[in-house]
Length: 387
Image 1: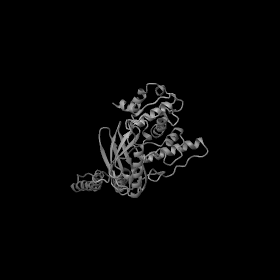
Image 2: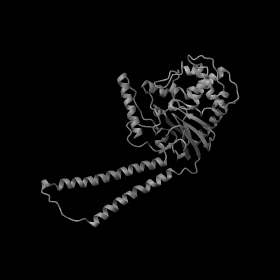
Image 3: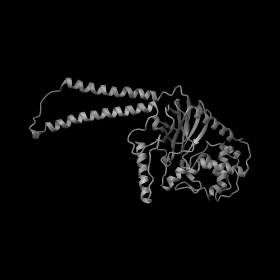
Image 4: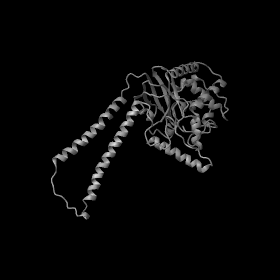
């Protein structure tokens, strides 16, 4: 239903754009994601998803047959034995045989539905012997991924809605089939390997799910839940946060990229090199130009989706360009908001960023656009603020 409603929403946006312009964007199927006028479940690429589709179809057929049988007999009796045809009411006592029959048959139907459903549920909860374990942490409003065990252990990154997608949403003119599903850092996993997903959350309840995998697991603050999948086809697969988690709920997509084992190994090696290159000495004293350059990248990856690349904000999102708080000589005020959030979660906390990244992005905002303050924040200042 969520996938269908998402497509209906897209169709509505396309229709609105058609009224405003001479050429409306045509919505196309998204491989691994929702399709145009999709009425069935997502094409399954795991055994669990295939089993779920079988259960759905089997129970739909059974319920339809029961509906037709029960209501068919009822309406036949009403029409065939109505008073206008001279039917006379019968006077009889209960039939033990009939009562036994209408007790046994529903019992057998329920057992026939429960056995395969139980088998599927038990399989869904069996997260043992995983080849790769990834922790998915929900934040308002992004996902954090930590590769805990298996090839790629130690990798960690945030996955945020691509900035161009947010700009499309602000303009009301989507022009991509992966509208509101494109992220800057997709989850990457190898094909035909058992992937365990451990879910938790940093602020409110989120839910991690991908329809093509038959996976949906709540991410609850203070709790650890888990699920798993084994993708049998390479490709790109999409999902969204399936728990209403606040005003930016629609901007929290999930993108899983399934690669061949060889390509996955190459991706891991590349990411490890990038992490090593990004490793910072927390005691290093940076120059203003270097911090601003670093901060621009951090801002583009994490902040621009809400505050916009030009720092002007949008709607309830406050502008950073010209902000009195940003321009204030007391940088501790801005650091506190970045670390701990503000406005009851409207501005989420960013403790997951390193001291250098926070120092860089704060320094960047203080010196970007019209905020030419010349102020500099060092990583040591962030480390002190965390205490």
